[in-house]
Length: 397
Image (cartoon, rainbow, N blue to C red; front, side, top):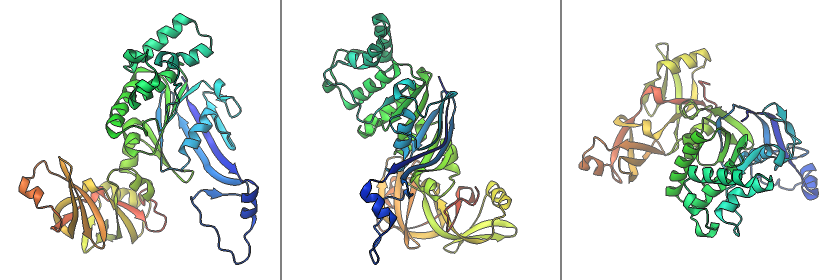
Protein backbone atom coordinates (compact mmCIF):
# COMPACT_ATOMS: atom_id res chain seq x y z
CA UNK A 1 0.00 0.00 0.00
CA UNK A 2 1.08 3.60 -0.29
CA UNK A 3 0.91 7.14 0.90
CA UNK A 4 0.43 10.00 -1.57
CA UNK A 5 1.84 13.50 -1.69
CA UNK A 6 0.31 16.20 -3.89
CA UNK A 7 2.57 19.27 -3.89
CA UNK A 8 1.39 22.49 -5.53
CA UNK A 9 -0.55 20.52 -8.14
CA UNK A 10 -1.92 22.79 -10.86
CA UNK A 11 -4.02 22.12 -13.95
CA UNK A 12 -4.31 24.67 -16.75
CA UNK A 13 -6.45 24.04 -19.82
CA UNK A 14 -4.83 26.07 -22.62
CA UNK A 15 -6.92 28.37 -24.81
CA UNK A 16 -7.73 27.39 -28.35
CA UNK A 17 -6.91 29.97 -31.03
CA UNK A 18 -10.16 31.92 -30.76
CA UNK A 19 -10.10 31.97 -26.95
CA UNK A 20 -6.53 33.27 -26.94
CA UNK A 21 -7.49 36.21 -29.13
CA UNK A 22 -10.46 37.03 -26.89
CA UNK A 23 -8.28 36.81 -23.78
CA UNK A 24 -5.67 39.24 -25.17
CA UNK A 25 -8.07 42.10 -25.60
CA UNK A 26 -11.62 43.13 -26.28
CA UNK A 27 -12.67 45.66 -28.86
CA UNK A 28 -13.22 49.17 -27.55
CA UNK A 29 -16.71 49.71 -26.18
CA UNK A 30 -17.46 45.97 -26.24
CA UNK A 31 -19.06 44.54 -23.14
CA UNK A 32 -16.87 41.94 -21.40
CA UNK A 33 -18.15 38.42 -21.68
CA UNK A 34 -19.77 37.15 -18.49
CA UNK A 35 -17.88 34.37 -16.76
CA UNK A 36 -19.74 31.08 -16.69
CA UNK A 37 -17.52 29.90 -13.87
CA UNK A 38 -15.26 31.62 -11.37
CA UNK A 39 -12.09 29.79 -12.39
CA UNK A 40 -8.94 31.86 -12.65
CA UNK A 41 -7.99 32.94 -16.17
CA UNK A 42 -4.26 33.25 -16.92
CA UNK A 43 -2.38 34.13 -20.10
CA UNK A 44 -1.79 30.38 -20.54
CA UNK A 45 -5.44 29.35 -20.20
CA UNK A 46 -8.11 28.43 -17.64
CA UNK A 47 -6.74 27.27 -14.29
CA UNK A 48 -8.97 24.36 -13.27
CA UNK A 49 -6.93 23.40 -10.19
CA UNK A 50 -4.77 25.89 -8.27
CA UNK A 51 -1.82 24.87 -6.08
CA UNK A 52 -3.44 21.78 -4.59
CA UNK A 53 -1.46 20.52 -1.57
CA UNK A 54 -2.35 17.36 0.31
CA UNK A 55 -0.50 14.61 2.20
CA UNK A 56 -2.43 11.33 2.26
CA UNK A 57 -1.40 8.63 4.72
CA UNK A 58 -1.21 4.95 3.85
CA UNK A 59 -4.71 3.34 4.01
CA UNK A 60 -6.40 6.70 4.60
CA UNK A 61 -9.84 7.40 3.10
CA UNK A 62 -9.83 10.90 1.58
CA UNK A 63 -12.95 12.50 0.10
CA UNK A 64 -12.79 15.39 -2.38
CA UNK A 65 -16.08 17.28 -2.24
CA UNK A 66 -17.46 20.44 -3.79
CA UNK A 67 -19.97 21.76 -6.32
CA UNK A 68 -19.85 20.83 -10.00
CA UNK A 69 -16.89 22.38 -11.81
CA UNK A 70 -14.75 22.90 -8.70
CA UNK A 71 -11.86 20.74 -9.95
CA UNK A 72 -12.29 17.62 -7.81
CA UNK A 73 -12.63 15.13 -10.69
CA UNK A 74 -9.78 16.85 -12.56
CA UNK A 75 -7.58 16.37 -9.48
CA UNK A 76 -8.55 12.69 -9.30
CA UNK A 77 -7.80 12.21 -13.00
CA UNK A 78 -4.35 13.78 -12.52
CA UNK A 79 -3.66 11.24 -9.76
CA UNK A 80 -4.82 8.49 -12.13
CA UNK A 81 -2.65 9.79 -14.98
CA UNK A 82 -5.65 10.47 -17.22
CA UNK A 83 -4.95 14.23 -17.13
CA UNK A 84 -1.53 15.79 -17.57
CA UNK A 85 -0.24 17.76 -14.56
CA UNK A 86 0.49 21.36 -15.57
CA UNK A 87 2.57 22.15 -12.48
CA UNK A 88 3.63 20.67 -9.15
CA UNK A 89 4.69 17.18 -8.11
CA UNK A 90 2.73 13.99 -7.44
CA UNK A 91 4.30 11.22 -5.38
CA UNK A 92 2.87 7.75 -4.80
CA UNK A 93 4.97 6.36 -1.98
CA UNK A 94 8.45 7.75 -2.60
CA UNK A 95 8.12 7.72 -6.39
CA UNK A 96 7.53 10.86 -8.46
CA UNK A 97 4.84 9.82 -10.97
CA UNK A 98 4.14 13.00 -12.96
CA UNK A 99 5.34 11.36 -16.17
CA UNK A 100 4.52 7.73 -15.29
CA UNK A 101 1.87 6.07 -17.49
CA UNK A 102 -1.47 5.23 -15.79
CA UNK A 103 -0.89 1.49 -16.14
CA UNK A 104 2.40 1.77 -14.25
CA UNK A 105 1.09 3.77 -11.27
CA UNK A 106 -0.47 0.75 -9.52
CA UNK A 107 -3.81 2.48 -9.09
CA UNK A 108 -7.34 1.39 -9.95
CA UNK A 109 -10.31 3.61 -10.73
CA UNK A 110 -14.07 3.15 -10.38
CA UNK A 111 -16.01 5.39 -12.76
CA UNK A 112 -19.40 7.04 -12.38
CA UNK A 113 -20.90 5.12 -15.33
CA UNK A 114 -19.48 1.69 -14.27
CA UNK A 115 -17.65 1.20 -17.65
CA UNK A 116 -18.42 -2.54 -17.76
CA UNK A 117 -18.03 -4.65 -20.91
CA UNK A 118 -21.63 -5.51 -21.91
CA UNK A 119 -20.70 -8.69 -23.83
CA UNK A 120 -18.79 -10.21 -20.88
CA UNK A 121 -20.14 -11.98 -17.82
CA UNK A 122 -19.63 -10.53 -14.36
CA UNK A 123 -16.84 -13.06 -13.80
CA UNK A 124 -15.03 -12.03 -17.00
CA UNK A 125 -15.48 -8.31 -16.26
CA UNK A 126 -13.84 -8.73 -12.86
CA UNK A 127 -11.11 -10.99 -14.24
CA UNK A 128 -10.31 -8.82 -17.28
CA UNK A 129 -7.38 -6.83 -15.86
CA UNK A 130 -5.84 -9.98 -14.36
CA UNK A 131 -6.01 -11.75 -17.73
CA UNK A 132 -4.23 -8.81 -19.36
CA UNK A 133 -1.42 -9.32 -16.84
CA UNK A 134 -1.26 -13.03 -17.76
CA UNK A 135 -2.08 -13.99 -14.17
CA UNK A 136 -2.34 -17.81 -13.71
CA UNK A 137 -5.91 -19.12 -14.11
CA UNK A 138 -6.18 -20.59 -10.61
CA UNK A 139 -5.07 -17.26 -9.08
CA UNK A 140 -7.60 -15.35 -11.23
CA UNK A 141 -10.35 -17.71 -10.09
CA UNK A 142 -9.40 -17.31 -6.43
CA UNK A 143 -9.22 -13.50 -6.58
CA UNK A 144 -12.49 -13.12 -8.52
CA UNK A 145 -14.37 -15.36 -6.09
CA UNK A 146 -12.86 -13.56 -3.07
CA UNK A 147 -13.91 -10.18 -4.45
CA UNK A 148 -17.38 -11.48 -5.31
CA UNK A 149 -17.80 -12.78 -1.78
CA UNK A 150 -16.66 -9.48 -0.22
CA UNK A 151 -19.15 -7.59 -2.42
CA UNK A 152 -21.95 -10.19 -2.14
CA UNK A 153 -22.23 -10.76 -5.90
CA UNK A 154 -21.18 -14.43 -6.06
CA UNK A 155 -24.64 -15.42 -7.35
CA UNK A 156 -24.30 -13.03 -10.30
CA UNK A 157 -20.92 -14.20 -11.67
CA UNK A 158 -22.54 -15.92 -14.67
CA UNK A 159 -24.76 -12.97 -15.63
CA UNK A 160 -24.07 -10.12 -18.02
CA UNK A 161 -24.30 -6.46 -16.90
CA UNK A 162 -27.67 -5.85 -18.59
CA UNK A 163 -29.25 -8.39 -16.21
CA UNK A 164 -28.06 -6.47 -13.11
CA UNK A 165 -29.43 -3.50 -11.19
CA UNK A 166 -27.47 -0.27 -10.89
CA UNK A 167 -26.19 -1.17 -7.44
CA UNK A 168 -25.09 -4.62 -8.60
CA UNK A 169 -23.26 -3.14 -11.59
CA UNK A 170 -21.44 -0.73 -9.32
CA UNK A 171 -20.33 -3.63 -7.13
CA UNK A 172 -18.97 -5.39 -10.21
CA UNK A 173 -17.03 -2.25 -11.15
CA UNK A 174 -15.59 -2.10 -7.62
CA UNK A 175 -14.78 -5.82 -7.77
CA UNK A 176 -12.87 -5.32 -11.03
CA UNK A 177 -10.80 -2.64 -9.29
CA UNK A 178 -10.00 -4.45 -6.03
CA UNK A 179 -8.86 -7.77 -7.59
CA UNK A 180 -5.82 -5.91 -8.85
CA UNK A 181 -4.87 -5.13 -5.23
CA UNK A 182 -3.87 -1.57 -6.16
CA UNK A 183 -1.86 0.73 -3.93
CA UNK A 184 -4.52 3.41 -4.43
CA UNK A 185 -8.22 3.03 -5.24
CA UNK A 186 -9.81 6.05 -6.93
CA UNK A 187 -13.60 6.45 -7.03
CA UNK A 188 -15.20 9.18 -9.16
CA UNK A 189 -18.79 9.84 -7.98
CA UNK A 190 -19.56 6.09 -8.04
CA UNK A 191 -23.02 6.42 -6.46
CA UNK A 192 -24.43 9.41 -8.36
CA UNK A 193 -26.41 7.25 -10.81
CA UNK A 194 -28.21 5.33 -8.05
CA UNK A 195 -31.51 6.18 -6.38
CA UNK A 196 -31.55 7.41 -2.76
CA UNK A 197 -32.19 3.99 -1.18
CA UNK A 198 -29.45 2.29 -3.20
CA UNK A 199 -27.02 5.13 -2.44
CA UNK A 200 -27.53 4.57 1.28
CA UNK A 201 -26.97 0.83 0.87
CA UNK A 202 -23.85 1.29 -1.26
CA UNK A 203 -22.39 3.83 1.19
CA UNK A 204 -22.61 1.15 3.86
CA UNK A 205 -21.05 -1.39 1.48
CA UNK A 206 -18.11 0.92 0.75
CA UNK A 207 -17.52 1.41 4.49
CA UNK A 208 -17.50 -2.40 4.95
CA UNK A 209 -15.22 -2.80 1.91
CA UNK A 210 -12.77 -0.30 3.36
CA UNK A 211 -12.53 -2.44 6.51
CA UNK A 212 -11.83 -5.59 4.48
CA UNK A 213 -9.18 -4.38 2.03
CA UNK A 214 -5.96 -2.59 2.88
CA UNK A 215 -5.63 0.21 0.38
CA UNK A 216 -5.63 3.99 0.19
CA UNK A 217 -8.92 5.51 -1.03
CA UNK A 218 -9.49 8.81 -2.82
CA UNK A 219 -13.20 9.37 -3.35
CA UNK A 220 -14.83 12.21 -5.30
CA UNK A 221 -18.40 13.36 -4.70
CA UNK A 222 -20.59 16.46 -4.76
CA UNK A 223 -22.78 14.93 -2.02
CA UNK A 224 -21.75 16.25 1.39
CA UNK A 225 -23.60 13.38 3.13
CA UNK A 226 -21.29 10.88 1.40
CA UNK A 227 -18.30 13.00 2.34
CA UNK A 228 -19.29 13.16 6.02
CA UNK A 229 -20.04 9.44 6.37
CA UNK A 230 -17.15 7.98 4.35
CA UNK A 231 -14.07 10.14 4.78
CA UNK A 232 -11.32 10.04 7.40
CA UNK A 233 -10.64 13.56 6.12
CA UNK A 234 -12.55 15.78 3.71
CA UNK A 235 -11.05 18.17 1.17
CA UNK A 236 -13.59 20.89 0.31
CA UNK A 237 -12.99 22.60 -3.03
CA UNK A 238 -14.40 25.64 -4.79
CA UNK A 239 -13.35 27.16 -8.15
CA UNK A 240 -10.23 24.99 -8.33
CA UNK A 241 -8.99 25.94 -4.85
CA UNK A 242 -8.94 24.01 -1.59
CA UNK A 243 -11.13 25.77 0.99
CA UNK A 244 -10.51 23.48 3.97
CA UNK A 245 -9.06 20.07 4.85
CA UNK A 246 -10.12 18.29 8.01
CA UNK A 247 -12.05 15.46 9.62
CA UNK A 248 -15.83 15.47 9.15
CA UNK A 249 -16.23 16.75 12.72
CA UNK A 250 -13.67 19.52 12.23
CA UNK A 251 -15.23 20.95 9.08
CA UNK A 252 -18.73 20.70 10.58
CA UNK A 253 -17.86 22.28 13.94
CA UNK A 254 -15.12 24.68 12.81
CA UNK A 255 -15.72 25.73 9.17
CA UNK A 256 -12.90 27.92 7.87
CA UNK A 257 -15.21 30.21 5.90
CA UNK A 258 -18.85 30.79 4.97
CA UNK A 259 -18.62 28.61 1.85
CA UNK A 260 -17.60 25.57 3.91
CA UNK A 261 -20.16 26.43 6.60
CA UNK A 262 -23.03 26.49 4.09
CA UNK A 263 -21.81 23.56 1.99
CA UNK A 264 -21.35 21.12 4.87
CA UNK A 265 -24.55 20.29 6.74
CA UNK A 266 -28.11 19.63 5.63
CA UNK A 267 -30.25 21.72 5.73
CA UNK A 268 -27.56 24.33 5.16
CA UNK A 269 -26.47 26.80 7.82
CA UNK A 270 -28.52 29.96 8.40
CA UNK A 271 -26.56 33.19 7.89
CA UNK A 272 -27.69 36.36 9.69
CA UNK A 273 -26.49 39.96 9.58
CA UNK A 274 -25.34 40.69 13.13
CA UNK A 275 -22.85 42.64 15.21
CA UNK A 276 -19.97 41.31 17.30
CA UNK A 277 -19.65 43.34 20.50
CA UNK A 278 -17.75 43.18 23.77
CA UNK A 279 -19.71 43.49 27.00
CA UNK A 280 -18.06 43.28 30.41
CA UNK A 281 -14.94 41.94 28.69
CA UNK A 282 -16.84 39.15 26.92
CA UNK A 283 -17.69 38.74 23.25
CA UNK A 284 -21.37 38.60 22.31
CA UNK A 285 -23.46 38.81 19.15
CA UNK A 286 -26.36 41.21 18.73
CA UNK A 287 -29.22 40.79 16.25
CA UNK A 288 -32.89 41.65 16.22
CA UNK A 289 -32.70 43.18 19.70
CA UNK A 290 -31.31 39.94 21.18
CA UNK A 291 -27.82 39.53 22.69
CA UNK A 292 -26.11 36.11 22.85
CA UNK A 293 -22.88 35.77 24.86
CA UNK A 294 -20.44 33.40 23.16
CA UNK A 295 -19.05 30.28 24.84
CA UNK A 296 -15.67 30.11 26.61
CA UNK A 297 -13.87 28.34 23.75
CA UNK A 298 -15.08 30.99 21.29
CA UNK A 299 -14.08 33.75 23.73
CA UNK A 300 -10.57 32.29 23.85
CA UNK A 301 -10.26 31.98 20.05
CA UNK A 302 -11.49 35.52 19.38
CA UNK A 303 -9.30 36.96 22.13
CA UNK A 304 -6.26 35.11 20.73
CA UNK A 305 -6.95 36.67 17.31
CA UNK A 306 -7.50 40.09 18.91
CA UNK A 307 -10.83 40.46 17.06
CA UNK A 308 -12.38 43.93 17.26
CA UNK A 309 -16.07 44.79 17.54
CA UNK A 310 -17.56 44.79 14.04
CA UNK A 311 -20.48 44.01 11.76
CA UNK A 312 -20.41 40.28 11.01
CA UNK A 313 -22.16 37.40 9.30
CA UNK A 314 -23.49 35.07 12.00
CA UNK A 315 -23.93 31.38 11.17
CA UNK A 316 -26.29 29.06 13.08
CA UNK A 317 -27.15 25.53 11.98
CA UNK A 318 -30.89 24.67 11.69
CA UNK A 319 -30.63 21.85 14.24
CA UNK A 320 -29.10 24.20 16.84
CA UNK A 321 -32.09 26.58 16.94
CA UNK A 322 -34.55 26.14 19.83
CA UNK A 323 -38.16 27.30 20.14
CA UNK A 324 -37.83 29.59 23.15
CA UNK A 325 -38.32 33.28 23.88
CA UNK A 326 -36.07 35.39 21.66
CA UNK A 327 -36.44 36.39 18.00
CA UNK A 328 -39.86 36.40 16.39
CA UNK A 329 -41.00 34.88 13.11
CA UNK A 330 -43.90 33.44 11.14
CA UNK A 331 -43.93 29.88 9.76
CA UNK A 332 -44.07 29.77 5.94
CA UNK A 333 -43.53 26.03 5.42
CA UNK A 334 -43.71 23.13 7.88
CA UNK A 335 -42.26 19.77 6.76
CA UNK A 336 -42.91 16.84 9.08
CA UNK A 337 -39.98 14.40 8.73
CA UNK A 338 -41.03 11.87 11.37
CA UNK A 339 -38.74 12.42 14.35
CA UNK A 340 -38.36 16.12 13.49
CA UNK A 341 -40.17 18.96 11.74
CA UNK A 342 -38.34 21.30 9.37
CA UNK A 343 -39.63 24.86 9.62
CA UNK A 344 -39.08 27.65 7.10
CA UNK A 345 -39.71 30.84 9.05
CA UNK A 346 -39.90 34.46 7.85
CA UNK A 347 -37.85 36.44 10.34
CA UNK A 348 -35.96 39.75 10.08
CA UNK A 349 -36.62 39.88 6.34
CA UNK A 350 -35.12 36.52 5.51
CA UNK A 351 -35.93 32.79 5.44
CA UNK A 352 -34.70 30.99 8.56
CA UNK A 353 -34.64 27.18 8.52
CA UNK A 354 -34.86 25.25 11.77
CA UNK A 355 -35.02 21.55 12.62
CA UNK A 356 -37.22 20.90 15.66
CA UNK A 357 -37.26 17.48 17.33
CA UNK A 358 -40.77 16.05 17.83
CA UNK A 359 -39.66 13.38 20.31
CA UNK A 360 -41.05 15.21 23.36
CA UNK A 361 -43.92 16.99 21.63
CA UNK A 362 -47.60 16.07 21.58
CA UNK A 363 -49.50 15.77 18.31
CA UNK A 364 -51.26 19.06 19.06
CA UNK A 365 -47.92 20.84 19.63
CA UNK A 366 -46.58 19.55 16.30
CA UNK A 367 -49.79 20.55 14.49
CA UNK A 368 -49.51 24.04 15.96
CA UNK A 369 -46.28 24.56 13.97
CA UNK A 370 -48.16 24.96 10.70
CA UNK A 371 -48.30 27.66 8.03
CA UNK A 372 -48.91 31.10 9.49
CA UNK A 373 -48.03 30.22 13.08
CA UNK A 374 -46.18 32.89 15.08
CA UNK A 375 -43.14 31.51 16.89
CA UNK A 376 -40.15 32.68 18.90
CA UNK A 377 -36.69 31.14 18.73
CA UNK A 378 -33.14 31.59 19.92
CA UNK A 379 -29.81 29.74 20.13
CA UNK A 380 -27.01 29.33 22.70
CA UNK A 381 -23.58 30.97 22.36
CA UNK A 382 -21.62 27.73 21.78
CA UNK A 383 -23.36 27.07 18.43
CA UNK A 384 -22.65 30.52 16.91
CA UNK A 385 -20.17 30.88 14.05
CA UNK A 386 -18.88 34.41 13.44
CA UNK A 387 -17.59 35.33 9.97
CA UNK A 388 -15.92 38.45 8.59
CA UNK A 389 -18.58 40.37 6.67
CA UNK A 390 -16.27 41.11 3.72
CA UNK A 391 -14.06 38.03 3.35
CA UNK A 392 -16.38 35.37 4.80
CA UNK A 393 -13.50 33.91 6.83
CA UNK A 394 -14.28 32.52 10.29
CA UNK A 395 -13.02 35.03 12.86
CA UNK A 396 -12.05 32.15 15.15
CA UNK A 397 -9.75 30.61 12.52
